[in-house]
Length: 143
Figure 1: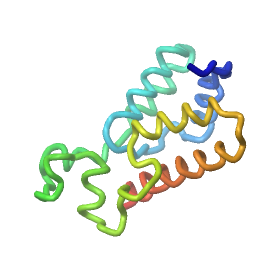
Figure 2: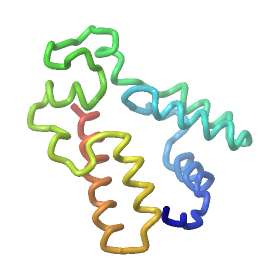
Figure 3: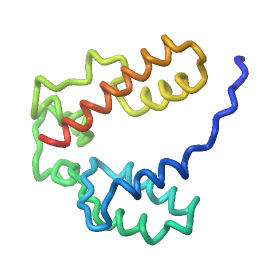
Figure 4: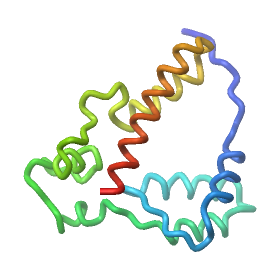
């Protein structure tokens, strides 16, 4: 088994950047409650920022709700209300199928692999794949 590199904990830097970037009254658009759960984790880890984080959480608008509640449903979604299941049905030209990173589990694994390698070419390849995956996720929220 390969030896793990020491990775600096960057959660506080991420949190500070998020708090700087998100105005207190901003409407935050997300798809499912993944982001809310991560913000809740950050509030638990850094209680001095809990009130500010909770204000962001209160302003999250979950775009998956119409699909989860079956207000909008197509048989091609095959019972799924995930963005990966909904987006290609609503916007067929936007698909995760041919992507090197095509779901959240793959994204987490790719990120971990990127943090473990010192091969800059491999870092670039993984980073590009992750950015393409995130780009499609973000574009899907605009539809």
